[in-house]
Image (tube, rainbow, N blue to C red; front, side, top):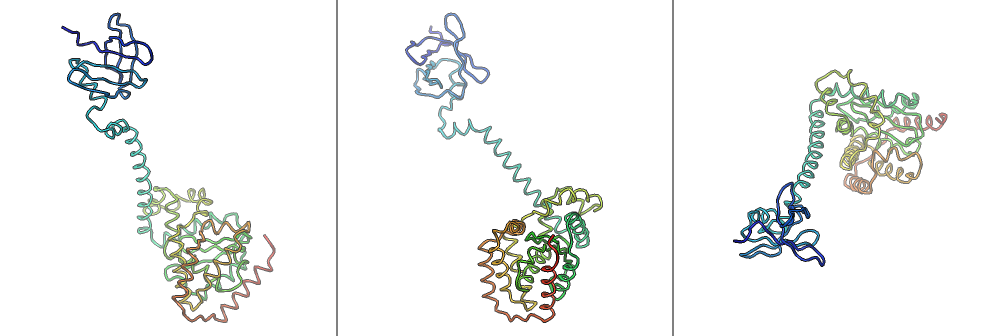
Length: 360
């Protein structure tokens, strides 16, 4: 009666085939000489594939080019066939071998997705639950942290406030205007009503319509709570929950530590487009030519090479798409413009103040 524990092993190269015994353990097939039981080699299961199978035996190929013929009566043959994926498609075998890496990759993707879902969800909850009063308190804390080391031009700030007082830019917020004595071309909105304008961007303007466009754009970020949403997404979930339920005094340190990051937050294209459109609607309601928005965009684009300009453009991406949208809006809304003498006078006073004040 033949020994059914014996298999035939044919190593690569000129070496002749030999009879060996096999044992399956530790995720590998271990080969031993049939006569002396000396260890020969071990091959991981994943290196086995079926070359041929018939009623008498199955022939396997191994990763290094070896072949192993296992008789049909061998007790390990069913397990070897299963481990080599016999009867499955190549796709199924490959997929089974990739199962662990795929699971790990899937878990990482799921974790990343859930992080952004949770962050977006928490900020969305914050937008709905944070009252205007708390938003104003938060805005004041952010304003204090951001402008702690800035030089404020109080004269220009007062004149800008007088200019903006002639306009109806918000029904929900008490807008407050500050001019920073700095040649950077920059401006940003803070939740709750603060609008900060750098002297550098004012010096780029030549028409009051451009300033109305800037104020309309930034006030729209406040009215639509874009700036609040951006900042809530930047800060942690615990911070947002403290905003909704807790004492604002306990989060002052967090705001102070993140002041630079909050200042450099960039709006998405969709939010910029919305702020442009809402700002131009505000211009129309104040009987100001919305062409001022296009003029402002062109002015900033032309000065883009200026070393001090990237502050504004990095947070307010100025795309050609925005300009095209603004031109389309102007063409579709040919309302009558009526710049009041008071607004013109305020503009002239402001321009004179920022041009005659000493350079920072």
